[in-house]
Length: 322
Image 1: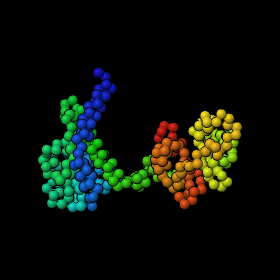
Image 2: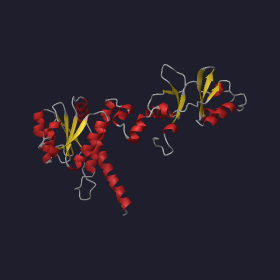
Image 3: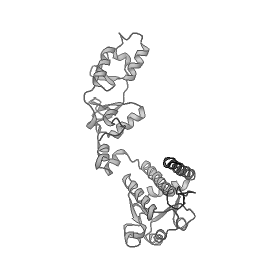
Image 4: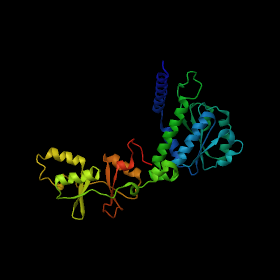
């Protein structure tokens, strides 16, 4: 067996176990979401070893998506780091076995502090699970490790359960792209998320009148390289024509010599305000399966000042342009 074949086996083993785990998720997950969402303080994740590394990642993910969160190493907690925890907090104790001494040792002092406790464990019958207020089970029957010893599938399960919780909390908080940008102002990701439509749009708007001939409107669309043109009736924008409209017109009219823009155009068109985030423009394009949007100054001023195309936002590799 080649290494690549073995790798595929490992993927399949972990996916199978994770599928079983997803089928066992029940209303206890709802209770955990409600507990964290209603928390007046912050979410504190505690762990040690490899599950501690997963807990640290989850704390970072929660914090960056609208749920105030920190990671505290369980071994350091009993040597002063419990001072980071308050009675308003919810503490999530992460341990696959549910019997890790460093984790169990923090339960009593956390009870004294008065915070609510959640167990994220692969053993729902463990001492940890019994001593916590809520339990999220990440139990898997088999590790991908051939010895059944190295944390593999179990750490993946812990990560996925935490990610599911994070996403549900994002949706509950209506956490949007502009919120995400607030917490990610640096680097390429920050530049992408903070970019506005006005920064990428073209002001060279393709324009024809309702009486423009089919040939001339096709020439205008070809010259501006956007695959569309706006159609005007005097000063009023009356509609839009896209490449698709041209193709349908050729199929519809045997003789296009007398066809005008008014015959071809679609009266309604999608638009976006110039101060919207690029991610918002992409969301609209994806929802309506279109590649361009008319840009207006604001919702009160419907004058078209530009066009934003998907090609202004995404490069040829399908990635956000920096």
